Amino acid sequence: MSKNKTWAPPGWPWELDLLSLIFVVIALAVPYSMIPTDAAMDVARAREEQQHVLWAIGIVVIFVMHLAVAGATLETISTPFINLLSPIGFAVLAYYRSHTAIMETGRESALTGSVAQYALVVAGVMVLSLIVARIRMARHLLRFRGVKWDLVSPCKYDASYRQLATEFQPLIYPPRVVRACTEGVLIEGFFYLMAIPFEMFQGLAPVAGVRHSSNGRYLASSARNLIRVELLDNAEPLYISPANRAEFLSYCAHHIAHLRPHATGGTRTQAGETTHGARQTAHGTAHGTRSGHGEASFYTHTNHRSPDPKAK
Image (cartoon, rainbow, N blue to C red; front, side):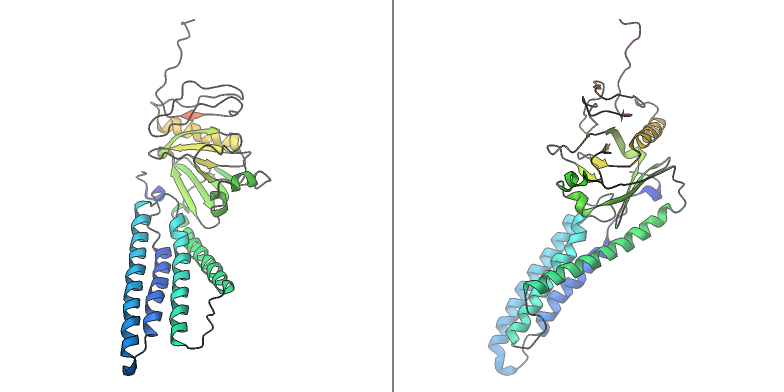
C-alpha cells in the first residue's frame, strides 16, 4: 500500500451506502405508517405489526450483511461493484413494501406494481447511483490535481470491444483515459477512478486478444491494445488498454525497475519469443510472454540471473 496519501485507496464509499440506507428507511417507515390505528381493528393491527416486525428484521439483516460483505472487499477502485448496485436492490425492496402496504389498506395510489414501474425505479435509481459515484470520483480526483502526468493515453473503442463485453466488467466499468506519472498509473472511467502506485506492480506484459479461460479484471476498451498487469497480493490480473501500448509499457517498466533496483527489469521480448526466466509466484507473478503474444517490453518482479556470457 502506498505511503503517499494521494495514491492511498479511496476508502469506504459511504455516499452510495447512505443512498441505500435512505431506501432502507423508506422500506421500514412507509409500511409502518400504513398500519391502521382504529381501535376496532385491533386484531388486524396486531397481525400487520407482526408482519412489519418480521420484514423490518429481514431488511435490517440484509443491510447489515451488505455492509459487512462490502467492507470486507474494499478495493482500490473508487466505486466498488456491490456498492454501486446495492441502492437498486434496496430501492426495489422499498417500492415493493410500500406498494404492498398501500394495497392492504385499500387506498388509492399511483403505485400500481406494474413491470413498467419497477423498470422505472431500477433505471431512476441507477442514474442516481451513477451521479453519486461521479461526485465521489470528482472529489477523489482532487487528490491528483498537483500531479504532472507524463503519459495521457485515451482509451479508444473499436469493434474488438464486443470481445471484452463477454467479460461483463467492461460494461460496468468502461474506461475513458489512462494516465501515468513517475509514481503510478491512474485509470479514469466515466464514474470511477483506480489509482495504482508502481510499488504495487508485480509485473506487466502485452496480451493479444481476450483469453476466456483466464480470470482477471478488465478495465479496457479494446482487445487489440491489452496489457496484463499483475499486482502484489492480488491473485487476479488487471487488463487495461492504453492507445499507445508500446510507449506505456516502456515507461512503466522503466519506473518499476527504478523503484526496485534489486529486481530484474527492462527485459525485452519480441513477437514469437518465450521468456523462460519469469515464473509465476504465489502472489501472481506475470507469466513469460508466450509465442505469438509478446510484442513489446516485459517486466516481472522476479530474482532471475542473467546467463553467463562465458558459459557456451
